[in-house]
Length: 69
Image (cartoon, rainbow, N blue to C red; front, top):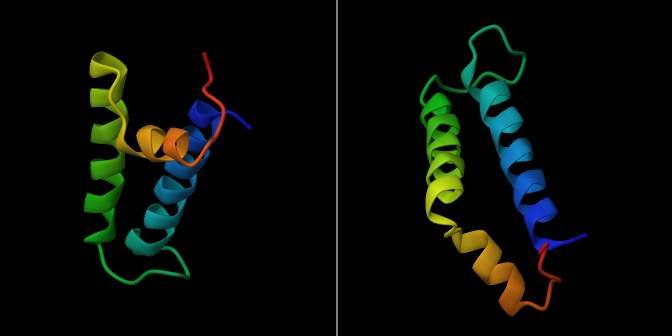
């Protein structure tokens, strides 16, 4: 897997998990404040699309994961 694929895997996993924990109808419901985490992940994806700066991708490259160029 390349770094951009792992970033999207992390984002998708965190969004689905935070929705499961934040939506009142979910059997895993904890608190509606988990929806704020969903918004945070979405905002990070949005800003990285415009700035091409993503902290997770920087970390992955330093760990030796192949760039997705």
